[in-house]
Length: 386
Ligand code: NZQ
Ligand code: ZN
Image (cartoon, rainbow, N blue to C red; front, side, top):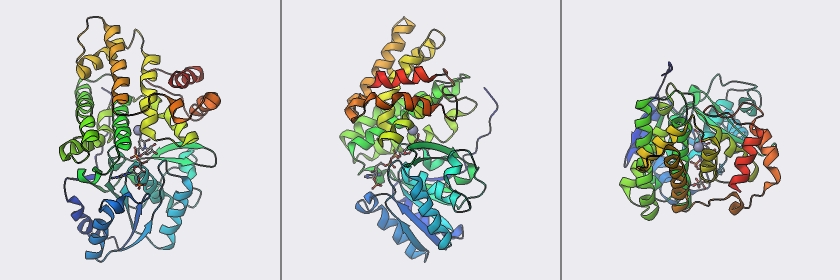
């Protein structure tokens, strides 16, 4: 195992009614004027908004709202949010929503103290030096953004979707009430499950191998494979929503990547698609993942894929390659069985931009630490996913 440093600094308040701690925690943090940020209104339909406002009012904390944060959040909204924070002396941000809202708030928190354009953080022209404190009230299990320092933002003008990260934008605390995810529609629930699984894959299929992390990763995969279909069938099943919610956080809070060089190729390849076509991140991942797996599978890593097949899917074949291939087929079938389209063409995507997207994937970095991918490899993955 490589040396590592891990900080799980975000306090997690998990369970029914945990939103009731918000007022007290904000007071303790000295918050007086808060930015309450959210998306397109789902939080008003399931009482999340009302519960937060009640808390703020009962602790006499004033707030200003920023609504309308889009899925695949835009840099223009980050600029707007930063201006609101500057001109209103905001001292704390509440991100009430899913990954897009949380990511947007993280970028706003950093942009508040930056005099240049916040897109600089994403193109590596600037690093985050200071940020407003923020907390998250999570409403969809998927990204893990509620307990990590990452943010992914889309520049709608350049059609780029890029990420950056800093400990400074990690939520101070996050409220994880599984009941808040009861209203997540089936397609978003399924996309979230695919995202969670992909986060595990990106770290499981990486070097150096680690027995402890293999066991933890396989446990997360088995948990969402078990409870995902239940949550889709019975959206109000608290236990299923709980298991998935906590799995989503564990999948990307740093733990499963400790001492490893995560691969992250599938994510970078997907981000190009959601940048150009504004699709749901988890859907793109579900379509690409089996094709990424088939592309990178070789004699050197066949045992890793076979282990995944044995331990996660219970495949008991003697032949390593057959086990690996069946595991990949089962992965593709699982995504299809929870209702995710299995081809990019089903999302209205054609091959006209594949070369450009492959080029763009490689603009800032090499891709694939488990197996390095060049422009032709990436284009082939896109084509096979069509
Ligand atoms: O806009 P609202 O009304 O909130 O509706 C949202 C949105 O339409 C809806 N929704 C959320 N909670 C709901 C709900 N609808 C009903 N009931 C609820 N309880 O779901 C839709 C999708 O929301 P979004 O925030 O886009 O979903 P997700 O959490 O999957 O976030 C995806 C974004 O996160 C980025 C992705 O690239 C994408 O931009 N990622 C962030 C990461 C990170 N920060 O660590 C890592 C990930 O790999 C990922 O790249
Ligand atoms: Zn993801």
